[in-house]
Every structure is written in C-alpha cells, then in structure tokens.
Length: 560
Image 1 (tube, rainbow, N blue to C red):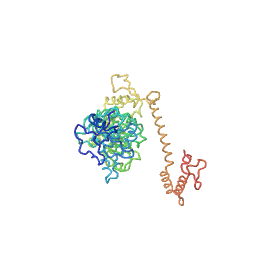
Image 2 (image 1 turned 180 degrees about the horizontal axis):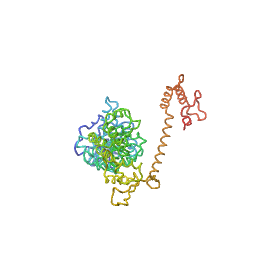
Image 3 (image 1 turned 90 degrees about the vertical axis):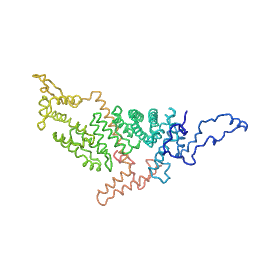
Image 4 (image 1 turned 45 degrees about the vertical axis):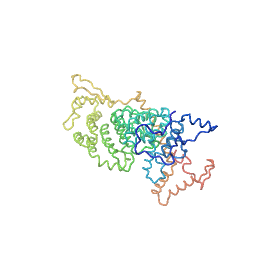
C-alpha cells in the first residue's frame, strides 16, 4: 500500500511561506541508516557490492510519541502513516492542536501568529503535488487528516498559482466522495472550515457546480440532525451561486438543539440564517424565509451586524407578502440591534406602516424609494405590491360568501382606482391552486360568456386530516413536540442542579425579600451541606453536616 512521503515533488516548487524544518528533525539519508546485522564480514561486503538499495526513498522516521505534539512536516507525515484506528484516535486530535497553534505556546508569539505557524506546517508543501497521487484506499483511511492538510493549503495558498489550482480542487472533490463518515465526524469543526475553503477555490476556478455536488455529499455523510454545522451555510451559498436548490430542503428543515459539537463561530450562524432565508425566498416559501431572517436578527450580540440589518429588511418584506401586516420582532431581540434598526430601516418601516394601514396608494409611493434597489430588495418590494390584490380578496372573503367578480372588483377600489377583471381572476386562480382559499366560480345564468358576471362562492370548510399529506404533517409535529419535551426536561434538570443558576436565584430573592432575611446565606449553607456529603455512604445513611439535605438530592425538591 502506498504511503505518504516527503519526497520532493517533480512539479513546481512550493510557495515561499513554507514552514522551515527545525534543527534536530532532519530526515536521515540512506548512508546514515544503520546496517542490518550480518553473520559474516565477507557476506556483508558481497551483498553491499551487488544488491541494489531496498528503498527508492529514505526510510520513514518513526512517529513521534503520542503525548508529543508534532512540530515539523516530517512529524505530521509520520502521523499520517499510522493504522486507520490510530488516525482517528491519535492523528486527527493532534492535527487539531497543531491548527490551534498548541505546539508553539511556549514561544513569545501572539495567538494568531501561533495559529499561522500551525497552518504552515499542516500544508505539507514538502510533498508538493505528490499528495494528490496517493492510493484511494489510503485516502479513505486518512480522509479526516487530509481535511486538515487540504484546508490549510487552500487557506494559505490563495495567492500561489502553483498551489491554488485545478489539481488541488479535483483531489478535494475526491476526498469528499471517498471519505468515511467516521473520519469526518472525528474533525467536525475542521470539516466546516474545509467546506468553505473548497467553495472559495471553486469560485476561483469557476467550478461551483462541481463543488455543490461535493458539499451535498459531505452534508449527507455527516448526517447531522438538530446539530448545527458550518457546512450547512457553505452548501446554501453554493445553491445560491448556482441557482440550484435540490439539495437545500434538508438543510432548511432543521431545528438546532446542539450548537457546540461542531464548534461554529458566530458568523457561521449569521451566514446560515441569512442564506437559509434567501433560499426559502427563491423557493417561494416566504413564511419559512421570515422565520430564518428573524432568527438571524435575534441572535444574541452586543454589536449589530450588517447581516442582521439586511435580514431585518427582508423579514419585513416577507411579512408583508404573507400576512400584509407590519413585522413585530420578538421581545428578546438584542437592544443593540433594535437601536440600529430604528435608524437604518426608515423606508421599510414607512412601507410597512402604509401597507398595514391599507393605504395602498401611499404604499406604492413608499416602495419607490431607491433604498430597495440599493439593498437588492427590489424584487421583494415589487412582490409585496403585487400581493395587494391578494390581501384585498382575503379581507372581502371574511365578509362575503357569495358575490360576482364585478362586485368584488368594485369593493377592491382604492382612491378611485380598481383592478381589472382579468387581474382579479388571475389572483383568485392562484389562491385556489395554492390552497390558500376554497372558492368556486360559476358562470352567470344570464350571460355565461361574461367573466365580470361570473359568481364567486367562498367556502369556509375546515381543513381535513385524512389525506396522506395531512397525516405526515401531524406525524412530524408529534415528533417535534416529543423532542422538545425531552429537551425541556433535560434543561429543567440541569437548571435545578446548577450551582450558578441557584446562586443567582437566591441573590435575586434576597434583594426583593423582607428585611432581616438572608436567603443567600441559606443557599450557601445548602451548598456546604451538598459538598460535605460522604459519597461512599449509602443513600439511606449519608453523613450530613448540620442535618441539611443538599440541593438536588431529591428530584421532588425541584418540582419534578
């Protein structure tokens, strides 16, 4: 089986930012290799003069001790040649520490400089393009480690044509196709970094369509459910760049309960929810789009982001399209974001105010503001205006059960302006087809050829739950409620046994209580009693100080 080597590549030389080998770690030459033991001096001389060398390259150095962090490319190459099990348990964790700059913590360097040194070592520039010629079987076993190597090359080699090229892109696509899921799960954070760097390389090479397929494979192999990964945002951006959304629904239909496993950054959340909302708009699901945009706006922060402002603007327009009302952000929206929104969204708030007040003429004037064009929201603003007739029909439906098309047109008149019969018929047809309303159109007995005299009958039949689609919807809702219930129980139990939370609760109660009481002192007494319990004693004969039972000793104390 072929192995990783640090034999110099036959192609172009590596970039100038290659990490130098440290003294004391040079690779031994063939002449420095110890000679094998011989039975006689004569036999040894004869063998050395006639037999060719047994290796075409110098022998690999032994892997560094498992408790020692690699500091050179030679160390990393040795780690890549470990057996598959050790690559998962040893190589990948060590490479993660190298990426964080752990081997250089003793040096007088800033954290960002230490990480840069770690990334330089991970590039394995000494292998050159030989890295891309390894056997597929070796690639499968080392895919989790190769994610570190390739992402470092893509991150640091953007200005180096000898590195940032088609061959690295094609090899990265192969890694996505052949990688085992266990190898990807061993480096969840780095896989997200790799996904974004692969997308940037694909943009540079104008091969985003191929990257989209590779990212979809990555997401499928990771198979995260309710776990957030930066890979999701990269996949959605690839969908937006290619305008192909076949792979988007799985990523959009997620409720994240685990946001720590993949160690995402704050920007990863903002990017995901912005892209998810934009993709939902492209798919025509404005209700889902508004939900994702609002999630981005309400992410906790002390400083508002431009992404949050953009999401707030689009959330307002999506709310006008779906309900025709002004958007009301949740009360838990960060104060820093709310302050910026009041100043940055004057045209949007004006449009929402006039739209909600059914002042359609003023709404059209407000929608003509140049900020909508500047923010790339002209399409959404026009769509909101096109839905004015739809919202008019919804209001009339709640009042009338039967009327002619001509009568409906007359009741939709605003400031002397009214839609024509064809526009109303087209809007009605779209609403019936989408299932938004139930209505029938009957030709007039006196003039069957006239659309204006056709009779509209609105139906108020309630939704039935006997179809397969309805039953599937109920099943998903039931699964979601069970999942939420489990998470709420786990969260309640964690709060009930959290010393920090109970300390804050005791202090809050102490501040609002009567004079002469000190609940904080009582809490400290309870904590001391909890800490002083003898863990070796049985549950029925625990040794307690002052006879006080510790907090969390009985679930009944916390209301469970």
